Image (tube, rainbow over all chains, first blue to last red; front, side, top):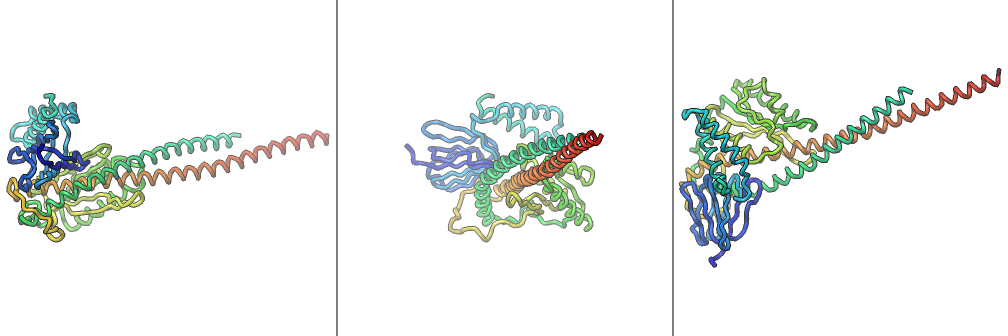
Length: 135
Length: 290
């Protein structure tokens, strides 16, 4: 067994997760990165996406929103604005958000600033559905 | 006697009102508790966030950042937070009064004002009285970070685009159940951050990904959202605290009223009985005399 790595996922609402894990994979703004114990100290921005950790051979995923991850040798602190565990994602809500975004996309032209916003919203909804495993 | 029945009816009505105010008091108490719990849960996030922001600010020249740019404050934007619902004493009145005074004073200085109302009471009051950018009403029933993000969307890009020069936030600071104070704080440009109270020993030389400047770009808007979210939590706790107190007063006022009405009722009843007795006595006396 690899040495222990402490992971903390903190959101404004609650401490989403706190415990030891074997490995963490984060959606960094410059690309996905994995962390094992002994990783060099790192401070990275996190963009919307899937954050997962491996513990006892099982992988658990979270859909996270923007924030950052702070890595020191034995501890990873992830501060994100939202974090939902894969099995707790509100699939209905994500579907609704996806439909709303699709309708907006059809309505606005590419020049409209609303278009970009809708596009981001669509990507997020799709990512959440994917993480929930019910695309 | 008609008067008797009227009083009885009134007593019943007041007792019904009392049931409602007492129920509202208990609901507000429960909501206050959960709002306070949320404030408690938010604290570690805020503390950790400030830690990182401070240590980052030590390394990067934050003054150059767009969100710290000080311009001649000609156009001012205000975020005003009130509750959605009434029946919470002078809670909203106080907030709106402060906002009104603040905006009046700025207008006298010749500033151009725009407003982001949060909460139905703020929106309704200022609908025609101020230039409203984007109203967020009926939001306090259930809200999370996405509300702070949405409010930030109305404020942050416009500041960077130089559509206005200063951003103020008016919210209710939560002291305890009985005390909430309306508070005005300046959000933008951000006061300089970091510096003094950072423990140098605890500082770790990180690898920054992306570069520290870009990271700051992402963290500063987040910082603003942290401030907005905290204000939302405090306003929501304050609303429920104020409602709890208001409804508690209303309940004891009802008690008082029932008491005085019962007294009145008993007096009227007594008077009616006396009157009837007098009638009977008078009648018998008249018969005897005849």
